[in-house]
Image 1 (tube, rainbow, N blue to C red):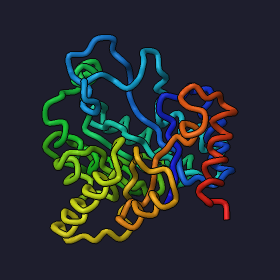
Image 2 (image 1 turned 180 degrees about the vertical axis):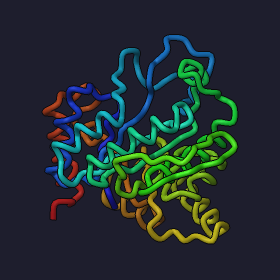
Image 3 (image 1 turned 135 degrees about the vertical axis):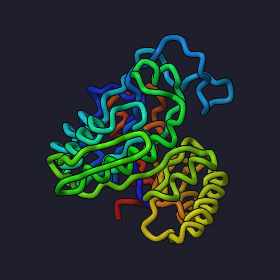
Length: 286
């Protein structure tokens, strides 16, 4: 089982120290969420809470994932960076491919691209991208970006995007793509890629999703070998809990260990102490 630290809702000024500590302590990765702006008023309900309200308060930090990865890569040596999740369809595919590819190059292949189709219509409107057909555009964007990340000349002729003969440098190391989301459509998309990223979810529901992904992979003639499953688990706290999830096929946990010890108001030192205690309590240090 791999363990990733979530950087969601942290002050940007803390993230570098959190990443350095995670790297030193033996954590496997750092999760980085994505929003460009936080609008004061929304008509679109947030889909991951019962009341449709957002989980964060106004003026929560949302640093650009690729600028952040470029910085974190310079102060870590082994930690991976996964977006939880990035919204490609809200961007121009060439600008997105350039930023992601450059970050992956600077991180020497430690970038994992978690993607979603997005839920906030108003943010799409602000970015000048259509909310409609965003799922199909996401699929085509991934195909185009993967072509742009290959060495040599590229041409692309899709339904939404068309590229004349061109090349994009630097050429990054391979970038695995993980689909995010809990719906069956989201699982179908993830099953075609390299992995799945879940949201806050109980272990039983996560195991159900793993079973569904196994079915979908088989339908596509694909196995679960080397298929990554990363998710937060809201009811797992002990080695036995994590072992149960791993036995069912969950390959990695995204967590905020300090929440178990100091709670949401933890200082930076409390956070790092919680990260260290978590590994000791789970027997991850030997």
